[in-house]
Amino acid sequence: MRALLMALVAGSFVVGGPGFAPVAAADTYPSRPITIIVPFAAGGPSDAMARVLGERMRMSLGQPLVIENVTGAGGSIGVGRAVQSPPDGYTISFGHLGTHVANGAVYQLKYDLVADLEPVVLLPSNPMIVVSKTAVPATSLKELIEWLKSRPSPATAGTAGAGSGSHIAGVYFESVSGIKLQYVPYRGTAPALNDLIAGQIDVIIDQTSNSITQVRAGTIRAYAITDDKRLASASEIPTAEEAGLKGFNMTLWSGLWVPRGTPKEIVTRLNAAAVEALSDPAVKKQLEGLGLEMTPQDQLTPEALGARQKAEIAKWWPIIKAANIKVE
Ligand code: MLT
Image (tube, rainbow, N blue to C red):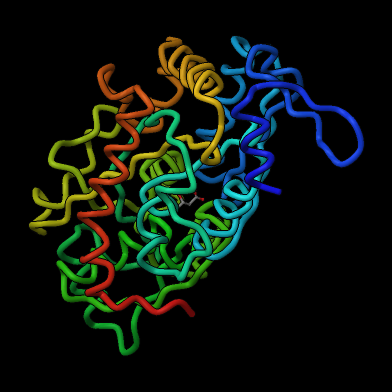
């Protein structure tokens, strides 16, 4: 059936009648709302970026972009849902380094992250940020690491599930600092952050865009960011190297994909709408205010996202497999 559907879509003609779902031809696309599957809970960094983008992409596509949060298993359930969708441009997969790279090394996925998806556009990126509940008696990264090492049992670290960006960042933090963490999986880092603010968990190695507002409000404490330069929007937070921890450098980039077999003209339409949204000064201001770095102009093609994803798979899979991450 899928092969038949792909043939229909590839032929870009509309087929009616019993047994066939009408397949919108590329030249009338989009003729109905488009779904963006965000594989994490509402209110988190992925959800926030998808909503900002979707709202602005609507202006050039002329159809609403509806966010559907399909959570669980480090984001791999939501990506799987997108992979299984008809390749007609009406389902977009939002994801990032965790879901579209790391998950492939952590889970026995029923899909291939490269072969079963078509890249659309590379989205803004941000470093990770080490944050703790305010009750932790540390005022620097060095003191935090000492405190973590002194725990009788491993401190708790909130993540968005095994293989998520926050989980991979936690494993990376353990490997460069010699600490040990006990991971607490959530359906996204929005619910994890709520528990950090409430003091229910000890730390998160979070996307900066998710935690920065709460850091500024003083409800959680920040220690360092995993970049080689400070953020213009949060210049008071040192890099991990400045805070005394070498080799902790991680940028979490995001992207949009569609199921393999989506007509090229539709991929081009979606890419153009996303590039227009990212060039909008209001969108830029909103995302940069959260500590996100806009995608360089020469990295906005679908091919650039495809190349980034493949390069990151080559870099991270050996590291993740060596860490022998077990899915609880
Ligand atoms: C993660 O991988 O940590 C996700 O970005 C969490 C989220 O977006 O909720």
